[in-house]
Image (cartoon, rainbow, N blue to C red; front, side, top):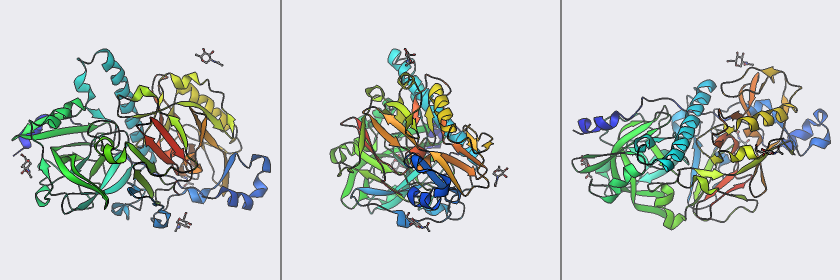
Length: 483
Ligand SMILES: *[C@@H]1O[C@H](CO)[C@@H](O)[C@H](O)[C@H]1NC(C)=O
Ligand SMILES: *[C@@H]1O[C@H](CO)[C@@H](O)[C@H](O)[C@H]1NC(C)=O
Ligand SMILES: *[C@@H]1O[C@H](CO)[C@@H](O)[C@H](O)[C@H]1NC(C)=O
Ligand SMILES: *[C@@H]1O[C@H](CO)[C@@H](O)[C@H](O)[C@H]1NC(C)=O
């Protein structure tokens, strides 16, 4: 039936492409390790270096569910889409090559950069560029499970702070549905499902929010495509969304996806936590007041969390104001001032961070820095690593070491300094990206152009509870949020 009506929308969309990530593993207790390894280091450096057991950096194929630390209501468990805690991956963890993961990360970053440069052009000429808006940046790496419908059925969805629409694969899959873990959502079996008609005002917001809009037998159609070549087309609909027993949202606007491409993972769809009218954050603003937080675990075999609403803040939280310059984009901004290596400020002129600013993104893996900032940072880092032989670059990562023959390695601590004078010390699971013991790379990369926005990626956010507060306009970081 709808196939011919969809075909116009199909032409906007690109073929599918893979996009995934593997997180590294690190030891949890540097002090215990340090004691064991005390012959390796002098005490002067105790507060400014990590000692990391190489074996702890290698991936685990078993989900460690004892890492769950959910203690707040309105919380969901977060798992990595290619880690062993997602039911679909139990027999095929680590099937993805690092070069592939990193080049897909670069595609996402390229689409963020082009989207933001389009946004600044739109301010100059909003009329001639409207169709170019319809690309979203990518689909992220982490999953939560939420309920749709009456009776409620559970679905694993990717959550992403860089996009704003929620959709799930939907029967009858008039175009195409990929394989997913749960049975596909069937609207005819839900009492609370309702299509949105083409005449409804919400239908007309679709194109204003940068998606493709269509109409089929008076049912409103949406089409969304992402920078990593994922896409979904289907009916705009209302449904009951269930986060927890006490957190139920009737009439939640979402996409009932009839033609979907979501990379290789067996995930039902996506939940968008960026800014915008359709965003989960906007639709739940009355209850959650545009506040949410997440903790991404240090290992892809551990469990983190996504928490909604103004819950009690961790005591050790550090806030930095969100710059206003990103308010009209889906992204949450940050103001980076500098980078510390082993407790000392790297010699970076902080004006290089001002040129294009910075954002935080749950879907970008590797943090991107302005070219001159990266050059200074890596040279400061390398000064601490000269005893290790160099290894060849790994895709976008150019500062790599060969640790073969070492049981324990030492790296300097790395902190990012934000406006407000806060120092966010990257967990040691977020300093090195390991292909194997003979190729471990500094897990940061440079932007191509000084005019490109810097991005705080998910690799460097690990173990922090990151709090987004879009009413007070601030982002908070609390160390030790999860394991
Ligand atoms: C699971 O995580 C806990 C907490 O970090 C740790 O103590 C335990 O050794 C881990 N178990 C496995 C099998 O890795
Ligand atoms: C929603 O709209 C589609 C397309 O018009 C139609 O096939 C389907 O039956 C509708 N579902 C409901 C519950 O109205
Ligand atoms: C930092 O860069 C700005 C702009 O290029 C320049 O005006 C300023 O003098 C520089 N500061 C230092 C300390 O080099
Ligand atoms: C690390 O990976 C590279 C590329 O696959 C391979 O050539 C090298 O032998 C590996 N080293 C070890 C120690 O496994």
